[in-house]
Image (cartoon, rainbow, N blue to C red; front, side, top):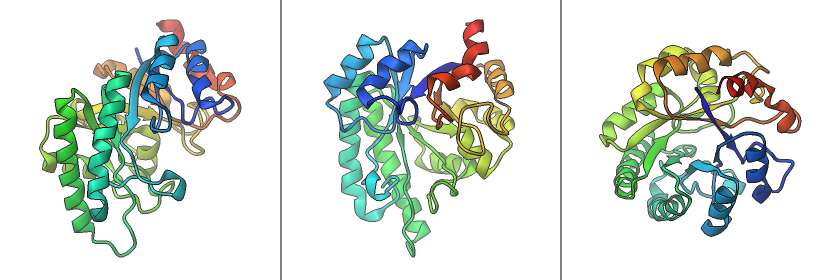
Length: 261
């Protein structure tokens, strides 16, 4: 049975961020994720989780200056010290929130930068982070992202991600498989998930086109949910989509799975 986590960065935008925890719990979510926790004290977020009976499923490592368009720094040669400081900060938050996994955004390759250098830096940073996070009991994930939404993003498909994971060679490095991004970049969703299930620690969803809720686009989500069940996927599915209206009124797609629970 799928376990859905509300992505509080994208869902419940009609509420202030601290109030999104209660809104998600009211709508039946038992887990939450969001891009970054770092603008709020860990104790404040931990209290919101506890008060609403929620599990913190995922957040990202610090990813540079998001407001200025940065989308990760893990592949940037001149940001290695900042990246490593960010690993410590992520451990502080994940430990306080009981969060068992964090995602690393590779970043956008600057114009004229060496792809070979970026690949080397990315692997070295991941090896460092996987080791340090592993000692804290926290899994490290990497996520391929489509280049239509984020032009120039360094990690763009499943094969590339798996090759990076092989090069790092850590047993604490996993794939975050975002169905929306991978539908755009490569399609062939069900066979890809099946081939690589043992290496996938987290799944995220949104429909395409539009990045709205399931049922608004071309992806056959009822089939994919049943497929994940047949395969025995035991992780969470993060609902990282842009609601077409208010969040609660757009949750009808979840009704069959709630009824079967």
